[in-house]
Amino acid sequence: MAGARSFHPPVRTLMGPGPSDVHPRVLAAMARPTIGHLDPAFVGMMDDLKGLLQGAFKTDNALTMPVSGPGTAGMEACFVNLVEPGDTVIVCRNGVFGERMRQNVVRCGGTAVVVDDAWGQPVDPQKVEDALKAHPEAKVLAFVHAETSTGARSDAKTLAALARRHDCLTIVDTVTSLGGIELLVDAWGLDAVYSGSQKCLSCTPGLAPLTFSDRAVARVKARTTPVQSWFLDTTLVMGYWGSAAKRSYHHTAPINALYALHESLVLLHEEGLEAAWARHARQHAALRAGLEALGLRYVVEAEWRLPQLNAVYVPEGVDDAAARRQLLDDFNLEIGGGLGDLAGKAWRIGLMGYAARPQNVLTCVAAVGAALNHQGIAADVDAAQAAVFAAYAGAKN
Ligand SMILES: *Cc1c(COP(=O)(O)O)cnc(C)c1O
Image 1 (cartoon, rainbow, N blue to C red):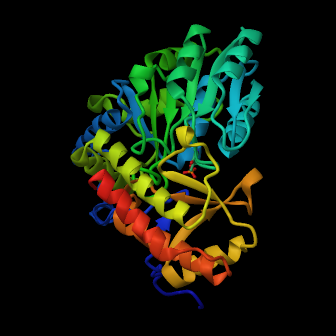
Image 2: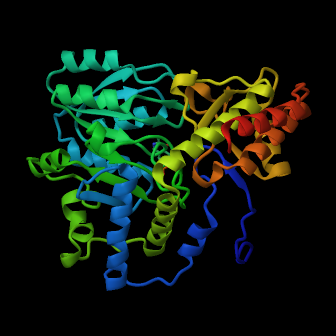
């Protein structure tokens, strides 16, 4: 039978919007022996994993765990637990993921009040405040901290403070921010926060770190209708992820995937969270110097740019798909194309987690320069590499 042989993927450099390069220690952790999901040794690892996740989220929330599913499952877990039929939810939409949040509200039987901002812009707190005033019945404010579809950061601290003033809980998408930029769940007063394993944590895809504040937990407990998803109902799943003394079967945990997440969080802990944020900023500065020297322009204004997701316009006259194909074929380099409003118009270059390191920055600048030259654009690759080195020299890499 065709295809009935082992699969050996090519070795790529992953600088798209996720998954990012996975650290070799994370891949090695995945290959360790599978044990039972109620084995005392495994239960001990789960407790360590919870503590490490609390550290990464900067929270003391007792309900902190990885959902067994991708970031999308983390998003869904927040909405199904916190939105009851008839609830009004204010949803901020400045890219792909805000729109998905709106669809989640509708599927939960809620009413979505959408606050729109242009793609590439941060969420405008003034518009959010106006919506909160116009809808005193709103129970939740939902927004994306780091919009991976555009590369824009929104001011989560300010938005959460507004929500609090208007007695709303917050649902916050931190899939791309966790481990890459400052994120302070407790200090900012965020309520239901989800993330993903394969962006700045540089783990394999398929797990969604999640944390709920006590206010969010109280809201779930006060529901008058059951959570419509059995699998994602936090009151049930905490029977497994809650207190170690009385863990009971809910679903079979993805054992080896959890080894991988644990290892990625150990790596983050060894480096230090603040040091990881600083590394993303430093690698971004070097990449930006190189890309701008090639003549590329950023989609997002400097103040709101995500270091871990560099969205740049595809220059006039360049065939987007052919250029990205050449990067893959000639240099084993994956970068992302544009989504939605930016489809065909922008490249999304990720610098997430283990991918945020000098060899990737240099490879990317040289390879993108070569692809531009191949299409007749006079980009100066030597000057771009010199700009990268100058940025490192200035930043004391
Ligand atoms: C990647 C991403 C998601 C979805 O995560 P999956 O693991 O692909 O399900 C959600 N929100 C944001 C901001 C993302 O970047």
